[in-house]
Image 1 (cartoon, rainbow, N blue to C red):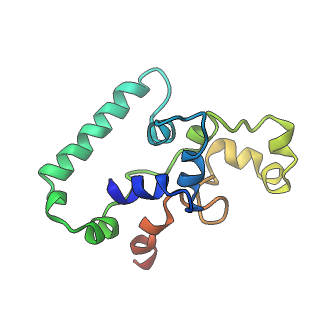
Image 2: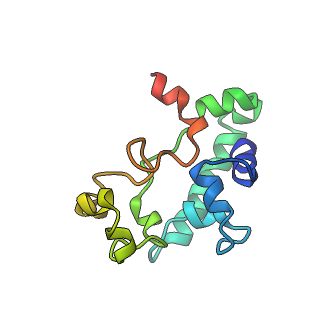
Length: 136
């Protein structure tokens, strides 16, 4: 995970992940805050997902890859859920709704039809890891 954590802790990075990591509310837990599943079984599903990462790293061959090859290969398993963004960014406040793009698609955002962390909106949190996927 070195490329991702290095980007998040880079004070000169302008990626979505790095800007959120600089938020003092997260402390040293910005990765977990943004990537944890929430809800009644959130902690359990997050831990199971983490064990999948360990499995892929050790038995799936990721440990034999160079960092460059790993960055080109690794991808998020499923689309990033807007509900994770909405843990901190409410779609109900006037600050959110005063933004014309937000107000114009608030229902689509709430349903997850449009992704907050998509190219057309705020962009992927870690854009450098999305180049290989775009090229396909």
